[in-house]
View 1 (tube, helix red, strand yellow):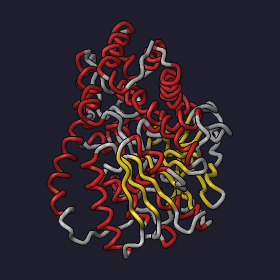
View 2: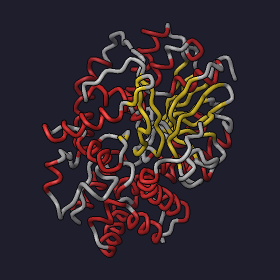
View 3: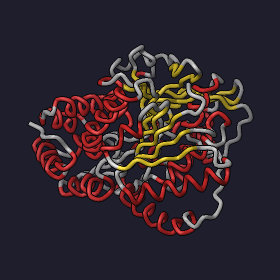
View 4: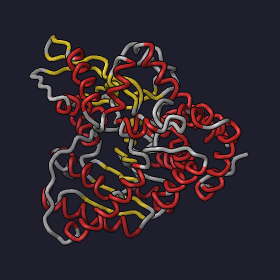
Length: 441
């Protein structure tokens, strides 16, 4: 490894996310002198991000990092050249018009979503838009930085990460942050304290399972389930779907209720509309969130861009910890999304991307054998894995039939729409997203 590690950030126009990940990096001695390439296709956003990162570099890093910007696809290989680490945070098509179409066109068919970025009809088409760009990116990496580690933060996590792992030689790990906050947030929400809490989590991204949780040797699950059942009866709150799923399937899920409600056929239903209100499900949450973030950035932009010295505290993201472990050989344990090729979860398919504990050190990413999931948990995971694998197949073969099949297999879409409606919906979305898609036959 070079004395000045090379980091490339794809999608650097995500200014706050960039600030968090690179700010974390500046807190590690081995990363302070990094050569950082910022890449985006939006000149305005790229320049804003450069200003923010230069300010942070000055205020907390004594200006030690070298920061350069690269605009547009024609400069991408220059950005990637000789990279040791590549962060991926791109969003193909952006909020407007692509994400808006992912929500508004399904609404015409009576299909509603909350987040629409992982599975469901929105996740499928986000995956179809993103995979071609990702294959171009990893093709560039194979040419100019073949030994780099790709840290993928782009959703749909399992679909994008799976396509890269299956169809390229680039070392890749998919990273999310729902696992980090799962147990602390759960205990806080239920008013429980634990002095020596230990837990085990494994599954797939956005549907990993809290398989065991203890305070020392004491099993905390009985009390968790009792308190969760009472809370669902006593008040409306943001975790109602997860608590209800725990009641029926025995285990708490890592992802939020707003996400999880659209990964199964039970909650967002036109034939039982009262479930939406009863379980406090925030339909159209992702578009609202995007609008809020845009407005918040407008409000914060003047202050952040004013030249005022920026400060930073370590975030919950894994990225900087991973790079530091690679560089220093000081191990760190994370939860990463990796190919199940060595049966890290023994009752899920080898071609699936699973989310399991991983030990990181100078030897790289070493996933931990999580064993077999409870049969009901594996079965629910498989319903989403079906969509992941079929979407990847569609993107790589450019066959419409596989697009249709991915949607037909999706638990929420298939619970709401008849097959002919699903096919018509897919055709409408293929047309709406034609700017970002190759031709499907």
